[in-house]
Length: 174
Picture 1 (cartoon, helix red, strand yellow):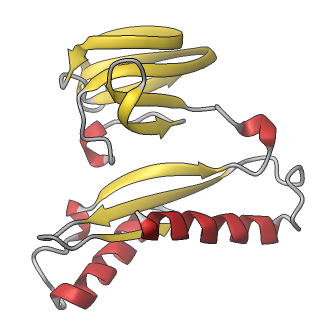
Picture 2 (picture 1 turned 180 degrees about the vertical axis):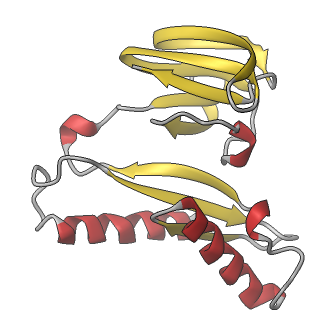
């Protein structure tokens, strides 16, 4: 957790430096990918500006302690999530938040783009509640790559306990 916080602070400083320290200079939030590998009791987390780069960075960090070519440090096994570094107040809450527990509690992940395979993100919980920004709709699919039965929800805070672990992909409709 300390490494994650440090990474977010580091990337925030980079974005601030790139924007000259003025929050309203940049118009789009910076997208970063944060990936983790947890062989045994070790915890390796790294970030990158692309998912591939974040996976490579994480695997490399893992191999420093587990050894080069370790089967426990495969890029493909890294769990990744996408995050936006907000540089303007108006960019806040432009994401759907998925929660593992009812009433918007527990493990959560914020998404602002379609997720074709929810298992490749850091969200490993049962989908029990969601917060959808005003004017947005979200379609939840029971299959990967937006296949299978779907359920559409509109903006607001909702408990969706009947979805459970069935949801495999998420499509945002603005």
